[in-house]
Picture 1 (cartoon, one colour):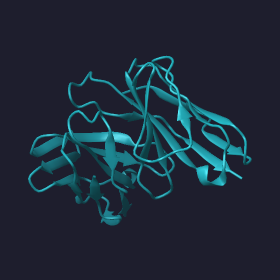
Picture 2: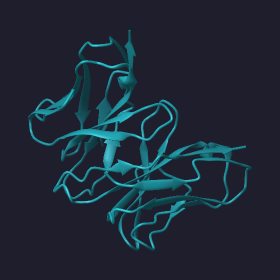
Picture 3: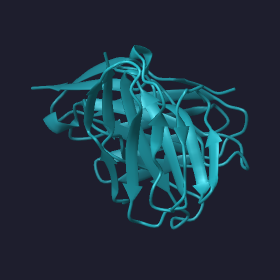
Length: 112
Length: 115
C-alpha cells in the first residue's frame, strides 16, 4: 500500500519563505508531484521529482530524497495568493500505470 | 497544459435519480481519470482509462460507472444517486508528451449534492 504524510496546516508571513514537508511509504516509487489547490478549485500542477535533488521553478522549488522517502516544497517571497492547499502525490511502481496517491494536503495561510 | 472541461459545475439532485457527469479534453490525451474529493480530504481515484474502450476501477470503491468510446470524452454515471454520493468529482487527463513525467491535469470539477 501507499501512505503519504503532510502537515495539516501552516501559517507564514507575506514575503517570507516556507517549507512544506511530505513523507511517503510506497510499494515502489516512480515519481512525486506537488499540486496547488485553491478552495473550491481544481488542483494545478506545480512540480515533479523522480531523481534525488532540487528542482527549481521560479519562486517554487521541490526537493526529493528517495532513500528517506521525503520531499519538500519550498515557496519563496510569499504572496497572499499563495494561500491554498498544497498536495503531495506519489506515483507507485513502474507498470502500475500512471496512478497517483495523494496526501490530504497542507493548508497554507499567508498573513500580512 | 491540458484543456479539460467538466459539466455541470454544480448539481443538486434528489435521491434515486440517474446522473451523468461529463468530462472532455481537447489535447488528445490517451489517459483519463476520475477522482472523488470530500472537503479537506485527499483525492481518491475511482476510475481510470488508458485509451478508447479501456476502463478500470480505481483504488476507492465507487457505485459509479464510466465509459470511453471516444478519446476526448470520459463520462461518469450514477444510476441511482444517494446522499452518500455527495462530493466533488474531479476529472484529469495525461499523456506522454513530457516523457515519463505524464503529469495529470485536472478539470474544474463537479460539486454534487444529493438530497
